[in-house]
Image (tube, rainbow, N blue to C red; front, side, top):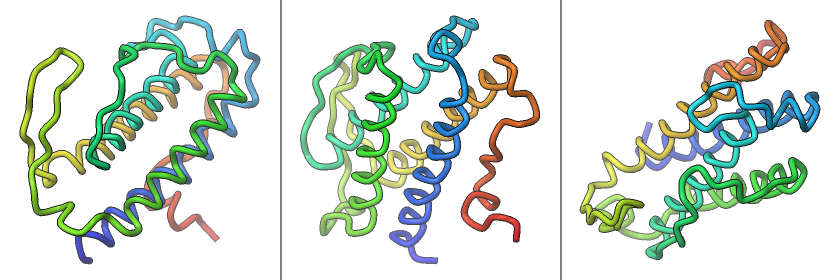
Length: 168
């Protein structure tokens, strides 16, 4: 598999996994989604907001720009419906970007300033896997929160091979 095909596959997985996660989250009350369960970003809602913030920062960097820092724990969408709409828009943007990355995208390091004000020059071979791994990491936290909130064994399957190629 070529590198660009691999990242297209990861972008597709990201979209489908988020669809499953948000469908499960939609079955909860707003109070449950926002309940602080002691997770790193407090609640399911906080975790989902963080994922959107992180994706926005990286997508801005990938496009050669910068995203204004809101703080990594900000609640940029208080309404679940607005958060869900923003997630759909972001996933569409991610898939479109990795369907046709800019010429030379994988050939040059990314220079960026992180939220602490530190300057980094990191190669795409490090940053692109980090981008997708970050999403998977926090979706795992969200999955655990769904279990804590009572969904138990009815939480969605998020394994890549089952998301991209569901059981018949």
